[in-house]
Image (cartoon, rainbow, N blue to C red):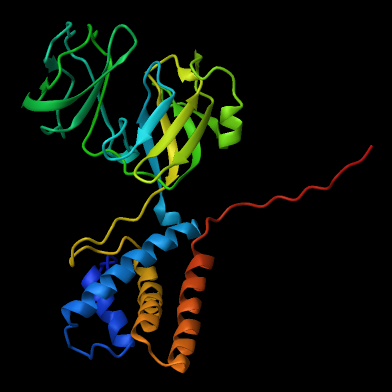
Length: 314
């Protein structure tokens, strides 16, 4: 038996809309939908996927984010233009190789492999603060030029982080923990708005042990308590990410392949109302769409152990 050895099947925006329009008998097999039908389908697809974020159960939409902590900061902005936070797999680390002096822009580090001009870079300084800037250029395998000179000295072995893209606004923060320089993790509490505002002075310094997340329209705001007294640890967040917009016809839907059928039938259902298809057709389609999505929501849950223990009295 010959197998492909490939498991990366997916579908792009145009393919998904075309498939849904075929179900609605708007496009025949092998036909290309009109520009108007395609535009309506694209709008409906984006709106549906955004609405599905509210289900909140998609394991594939959970990601780990690393946030670089700063002294005297209790509120961090999580957006593509906000604080220094990125998906954890994209955060790289090295160290100072030759001590840097105040105002230095040419920094010698252990390695520049993977660095490119425009990347974000953060350097721990000797005064215990974090110097944040961008990479202007990479000179060689251990020398990098930064855009803004060091605010103070940086000793040999001080940590250096860099990454390319900041994280977009998360929908929710599900869990959080501190990761120290030895990669030892300590769980911290994710609390509610009421619990955060009931805390004492927000500008106290110490080891972060509680966070509150406020997801606003364009950005999310993460509040920490107390403010960190050390920038050597990163704050790790388990988040529910926002699904990417389908801006181009070749953009793939940000779902695993097992979700494609559910997307197709549910999109067809949305379009059937707008097209004005017969009620009997919509009823049949609604049952199929509901079944397809229900199966996926039941499947897309984490396996975990459940323990029972007798209650003892006396």
